[in-house]
Length: 128
Image (cartoon, rainbow, N blue to C red):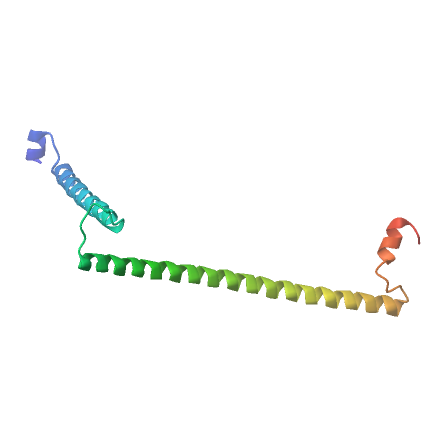
């Protein structure tokens, strides 16, 4: 506390600044490394590449393509499942509506009503 009072600084803030500087240096190094990798992956014609480095690049690209294809297949499978479920739901809805329609028509027959589907149209046009 006396040190902080005499220097008008806080010890914790100095430590945090050092941590921030270290973190910034780490991020800068990572950025440089990623830029180098990006340049390497573009296979610049002006640079000399060794066969092992090109083989490593090929392996990395194949692994990346495998991941992309797996994710694409997973998403397509999910979409197919969703659409199949939607179709099943619509079919069940259709069967339910057909059952209701058949039941309604059978009730009309029992009551002596018309089984014609045009009955509703006739009512709207005023023929009945």
